[in-house]
Image (cartoon, rainbow, N blue to C red; front, side):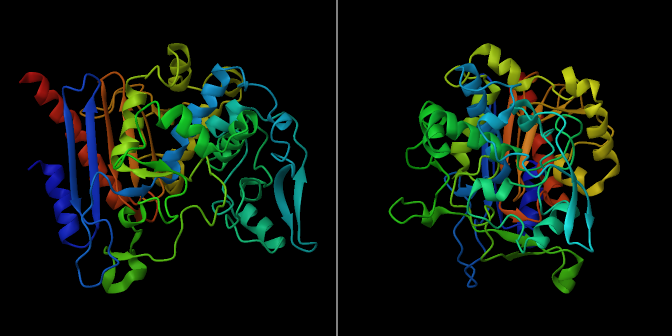
Length: 419
């Protein structure tokens, strides 16, 4: 048993984690690793909960973003979308409330200013559009309250993401629903739902869809055969849990998608662990069934320090945010050391320097709300996925376990090459 497996085992045994599924491979396929530990649910109080398996269906949450980015870049490659054109010709709803700068409490009205520059697909794919999550920004939460609305709790993409922007497009960085807009752009130019588009252009080309390798935005309709394999969410209690602090409890009734009735390109997909890992492998291998070589180069390229974004100093702002805002770093730093320089690519967070025994420069990674994280290291030729279903999002105790797995994957790869 490896040291990271022992750490996961101890976390499960002590009630700090229900279960986890782990997968890793190298570019040649000569090194492969998979392991499942614990259970996929805590719902059965008798203790006879089903085991976590590679075929377990998990809420991918923000891991959906890499697939939506691929879909959008496919549309660029096919001439259906442009990276730098004004998006309002396709999604006129985006940015319609202007830029929020404050709130007039006496009038119960936001203080806004008009957009001075247009929003582009490049902005959406790099979180430089000005779009932020209403749950994360007090001004946006206040704006929702002034309209008697509940943040994120809407059925459609337009309702969820039609918000005032928090800065002029291209002038800063903020994590939010930009990929929801990007997914809607794909839908509108292809005249397909995102589910149908991804099935035709991503999932089917990768051989996904057979039993155990399902991907979908809608896992729960009866007759699909998935409802008996869906992992349930759990919550890791903090100090508010009193004697239960540091333990996980079942979290019934919580839905990552917030009641969505449309495909959410930033947060809405579900899939088996094994199926999503096929997507991660395709990214590592720059699979030409999905994108041509030039467009894979676009996917991995650093964006914040380049072009107009570079002129605005967005890369420096992004790194300063992660260094100075603990919550932003926990949610958006993917447990990378704060002193390590970072960038953003269309694929996700990009590491800009080698980390000894861990990521190489140019590695990309991202995660999902319930403590899922994937990584692709093209220099080392290695990728990996750690999947569980635990909130709070990117909880440090869970992310530390995932770091152990990631480092362990590098050690196992090196050992396999010496055999």
